[in-house]
Image 1 (tube, rainbow, N blue to C red):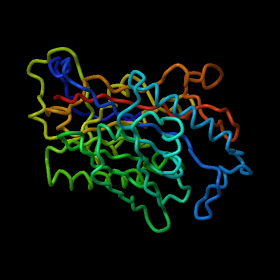
Image 2 (image 1 turned 45 degrees about the vertical axis):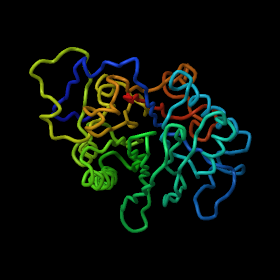
Image 3 (image 1 turned 30 degrees about the vertical axis):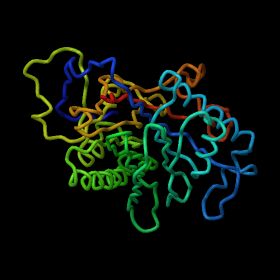
Image 4 (image 1 turned 30 degrees about the horizontal axis):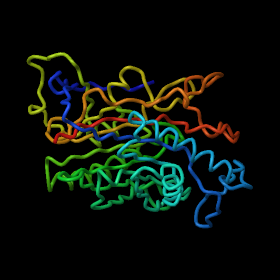
Length: 348
């Protein structure tokens, strides 16, 4: 059962939703790729499941099919132009992202980052970005300290120059799973939230108006305490009506806002577990991206991206993402998560 907490919903007036014909768009997406592994054995990692002789019978042909499927979805985003920034999780190493880009997205200006993870399963966070629009300035790798001999994915942070004039920070997350039960595993996600919040606080200490986008598979929903209380990301709803005498942004002290909340509140989700939709994949932004100039959120542009061809068409899981595997049974699909996307206006 979803846990709803009492909170203030901020309303954006129609003036904030307007888009000038002279404005450009930064298209941002996040996608859990569902176990993008290579076929080589890494003796330092627990990757035996995804080997040709492993239980998944992960072969070069299946990897190439996976590359093709992922590229098909990526290309279809942003009206066929592909995203400008794509955060990802569940990739074994950076070489796989480089292969995806060089073989199947070679006509794009994409570059990649995916620092090696301490996770023993060797599943990492990563980012693909348009080098024509963005210049990489810095990389942050924050380890979530869960205790001795307990390892989870790095929180990947990158600092970009949004050419030619602005700076933007992007954080890619894959928080600890709900394995063992939601409440039992919750302290691990709280620790991840604290780790991300600490990094964001350091940035705000230097610039309170910093432009920050945090995205990821948080393995919690927008109203869970890891998101609300520890990361302190407030729900936000864009509304096209004029809202007289409502709370304005300048009267609100919050500095992070969760763009996924509206879709979540309407019953949408990015991942289906049994018969329940969960909004595990989210995009969260700093206040400056909501009310500031030059780079700002395009009202109501957040969406769970589900083109018809990545949806399961029949059977028990009809309507869910069409995955690569169902248990150990190879299905040849895309991922067990839908991507999420959002648009940001770049004012010239």
